[in-house]
Length: 154
Figure 1 (cartoon, rainbow, N blue to C red):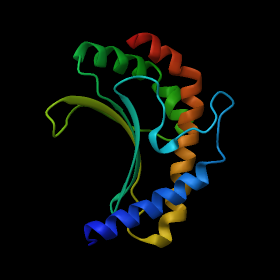
Figure 2 (cartoon, helix red, strand yellow; figure 1 turned 180 degrees about the vertical axis):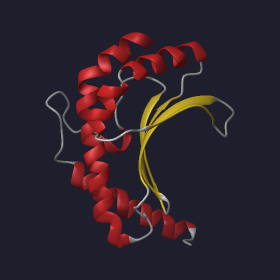
Figure 3 (cartoon, rainbow, N blue to C red; figure 1 turned 90 degrees about the vertical axis):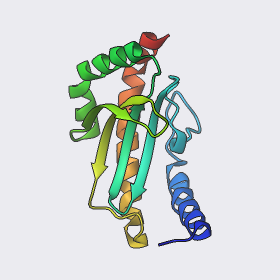
Figure 4 (cartoon, rainbow, N blue to C red; figure 1 turned 60 degrees about the vertical axis):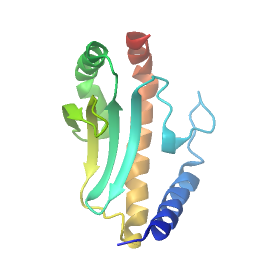
């Protein structure tokens, strides 16, 4: 495997290339979206990307400390499930009550491509293309339905 310095350089190269590729994709509402830290505008809701030797994933995490708020948001997402999955192009993995190492519970919707290996550089273009497709699909969905979620937690 990679030592810490090699891992840092590897990560920097991969995510730097991805950032450059996504730089030209902005929305009409927002200029210069930081795709690596997608702006959900909802505290405790995070869209994250994950890549390793087992595949690539886009994860939508709901990390509300208040279980009742997490429940309400999850119910709303369940109502939007068909629309979200149509936008994303495939079914996500919907998981409730994941235990974080820090000791709190959270919910996650995840889209995976297990055929991609982050540690094989020749697969980087395919990983970048897959992440781009999923991020842009999520972005189109989120532009339309984010207000519903924002109003729930305000």
